[in-house]
Length: 67
Image (cartoon, rainbow, N blue to C red; front, side, top):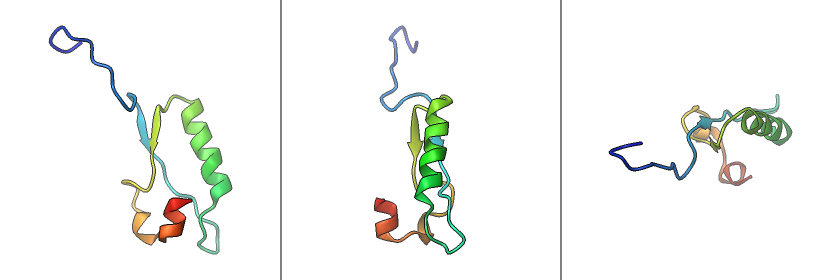
């Protein structure tokens, strides 16, 4: 409670910056990404920050970001 008012977070309390897994050829590994996302949500993450602060965002094409 903040100042006697109950505060409910809009996006959840635990947001995890998820890494983008790559295949050896440099392509985004969507299968591993889905598995990692599921694992994080199943273990308490309320939401995921995609292409955020983990550093790989500049290396992705627009299409890869969309996928």
